[in-house]
Length: 89
Image 1 (tube, rainbow, N blue to C red):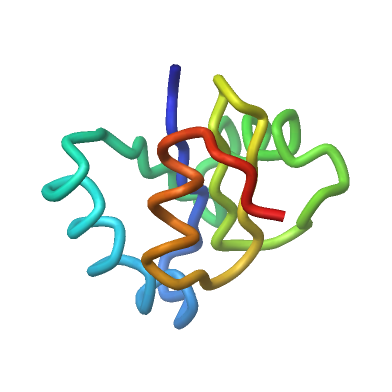
Image 2 (image 1 turned 180 degrees about the vertical axis):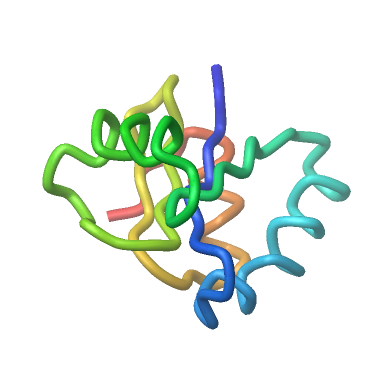
């Protein structure tokens, strides 16, 4: 399983999510791979593969095991459910 956060350098929404992602990693003992997409073409291609029309922007969170995704900012409870592969819809 991989947990991805696709973000843009300088994105205010991404910056708001940064402390939540850190807290998630510490409290839930998970690793979220953070991939910057505005300046890195390879990461942008990877985001397009997983996004597939779901979001189209950042931040975009994707769980490869559950196929659960979050588009934009989210609260901690939603982030926890996403990381655990639970339904967040």
